[in-house]
Length: 424
Image (tube, rainbow, N blue to C red; front, side):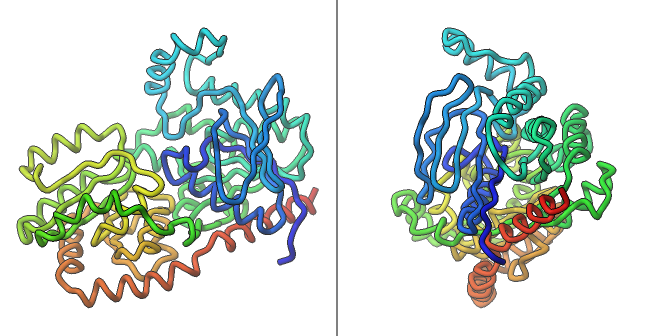
């Protein structure tokens, strides 16, 4: 596919290193590869961040509505909103209450709840869309969908709604937030094309949001091997004494929420320890179930074998992948699962839930139903016991993951852009 001179107005709300999940990583990988293809991306962030990368140069210019940060290919805009990824309405209100003493002195306005804040972000997108020239609009997930819709209304340009996760994934128990669902559904209905990160996610969209299958294009996420380069030895050295004592390290990394299935991981850990007490389980992440999981570990009597690292990013995240002997993704519902690719790039074998999008694209990983803790434990024990199995998964996985690139995802998105522009 030939290089493009397209300009894309892209709405998101996080970008590495200021990200709290895989969405920011996905935005980084996709925009980087689009830039390599000659696509100019105007990436709108909800607030000003000191974003740095090896392929973007930043400059600042004064504006009443926002500060502009630019590079030759990707430009960033500041919008004065308080959106944070994965934030519930209750957490939003708590954040506003805690921050109001300082921020109100700066005459910093807030909406009364998260949903109004999302709509305010969308309303502010009108001004930006009127002032900028672009060929197509691309919005990531529900917090950005209203902004994408507003930009479409004023510009008459085509809108791509990129779905990285749905409210059905986040709810985990089927009790979806009706307000979030409404915003998601409206965004997808108003979009000219919906991008799903997996066939698993496409099925959720078609079954639950009344979107026709032909409107949904599957674009799997990818990985940049160079993004997971050499890690700092400082963090991994913390585990050397454990390994020297003959322990194996099993890692699960992600938000500690119902969706991510950490409770199933802990139940499997208890079974593993009954057969092999020389195993340490690491839970890396944070979330609304963190205290519940800590209590669960105590009740099961395995507190000395389960360590909670808190949220990790950057070098610390890369280091813990490399320190682990095995990585487990026990998600109840995982639209994709970038952490699987990150683990494979790091040379660590993987067990992944069958209820995940990434299981569609990786072959060299063991797969298990999230609820089958006995089988999960059995697979953990097998990989830790049989060195030949571990070596095979690592060697074959390292080769396989090189082919799952962001270049392919960028090419698919570029093709979608061009088709929409041609149709207009």
